Length: 368
Image (cartoon, rainbow, N blue to C red; front, side):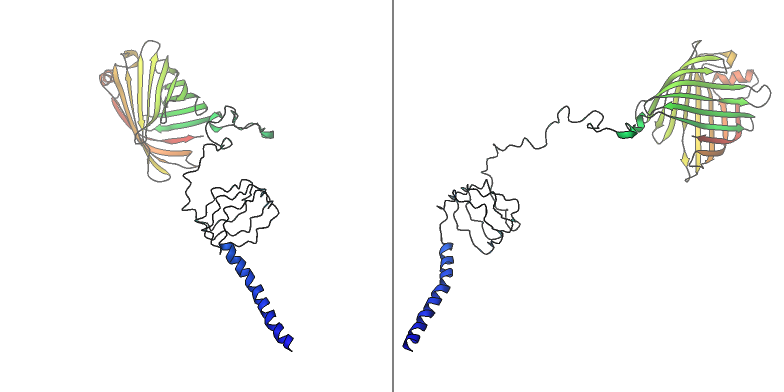
C-alpha cells in the first residue's frame, strides 16, 4: 500500500509535465529568431501546407531578412495556407522565393494598402512578350482574312462596291389648263462612289401638233462631299434641236432643301443655267406637301427659239402627295404656275403668247 501511495503522486507529476511540454514548446517558438535560419539545403517540395492555419499567429516581430529559401520549393502546395494573420511588420527583404509556386495561394485577407514598393527595381524586367507598340507590317493581311480561306461561298462583297441600279420618276402628271403632260425622271447604274445617270424632263402637248419639249442628259455622277454630288456629261435639247455639254451639282442645302444647279454649253455658244429647289413638308407618315421652284437663264438672245439674254422663266408648283406601298408610290394633286421674266415677257407679247399661266395638275411619282 505504501508503494501505491508513493507511485500515484509520481505518475500524476509525470502526466502534468507531459501536458505542459507542448505549451512550453509553443511559447519557446514564438520567441525564436528566424533571422539565422538557413533553408537553402532543405527540400520542401513534398511538404503539404494545405492544412496550415496561420490566421491566429502573430508574426509581426519575426525577422526573415536573412532567411534563405532558395531551395527547391517548386512542388510545395500552398493552396490551403491561410495567411490572413498579421504580417505587417515582417521583413522579407532577404527571402529568395523564386522557385516557389504561389499560383494557388489565397492571400485575399492580406492588406496591401501599406506595402511600399518604391524601392523595387523594374529596370531589368523583360516585357518583350507583352502587346504594345506598332504592329509589324505583316501583322494582318490586306483582305483581313489572315490566311483563312473564304470557303465555298467565296469572297464577300462590300455594299459600297456592289453595282446597283434605280429608277426615280419625280413627276408624271397632267396639267388641265395647259392640256399637256409633264414628266421628270432619273435613272442610274453604279455604286455609291461612281454612277452613270440618265436624266430627262419636259412636256408633251396633247392637242394640235403634239409637240414634245424635252431636255435629256447622260452624265457621270460622283459624290463631292457628305451632302453634295457632282455631275458631268452631255445633253440634248429638243426645243432648239441642239446638243450641249453639261455640268452640275445637286444635293441637300441647310434645312433639308433639295437643291440642284446645272449649266449647259450648246454647240452655238449659248449657255443655259437651270436652278431648282424643293422641300418636303411631311404632315404625317403618308401625307406630304411638296413646294418646288425653278429658274432658267440664258447667256445671249435667240429670237428663233423665243430666248432672251438673262433670266427667262420662273416656275413654281405645290403638290399634296399621299405615299403608299412603302413610300414607293405617291399620287398627288397640286397647282402649277409659270411666268416669263425680263425681256422674255415683251417677246411673248409680240408673238401673242401668254406671259403668265397657271393650272391644276394631278399625277403620280414613284421609284424602284
